[in-house]
Image (tube, rainbow, N blue to C red; front, side, top):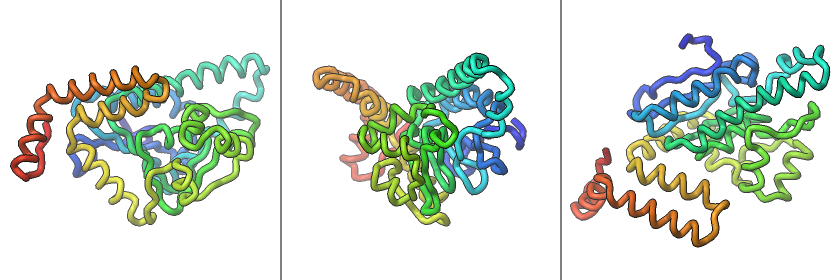
Length: 268
């Protein structure tokens, strides 16, 4: 992987079990072009299948997270008839969506570290991560309406579940830019911190997650992200199965011993 690759993956310099996943087109506000789209699924597969990784920090290079799709690359399709453009974007978005599903179904915990612009697919990606931490200079917008499009990347799935259907309609239909504090009030982000403290704040959260019991973290992620499609009985059964699976692991024994011995647990 070269330094000019559209997506950069690297082990965190100080946190074992943590990797950074960097959208790397800073001069274009990390907008999603065709090259980044092609790199997306292989990059996500790399971080979600690495058994050594527990946490992935998703971030943008430079001063912005992601401003959405690359309008210049979209413009390259305007010479094609509408039917051909449809085929083109059906294939393109199928690739993007395969990446979104990989992230959602993976055992790793994902943290979106958001500064600057977070719009279009950037918003979909940020709210689709398990946790989203924003700097106070971040701003958010659905943005699709400005170029005559509808949401992709799971935005129409995540938004109603986070903010409710009525507010989701407002965010998409009006596409007004909202600031980080409003995004936090709506539940689009978990925390807002000063821009100068963003890296340290995300590292603290990543360190906490990476040092926790893997089965506990991935089990909790799975229970919560699938709960809305389950009946109460189905969810209770899923909880029983997950709880019991965790209780069968060495990490459970370590956690109990550490609690009794009044010391921090050292999970494997």
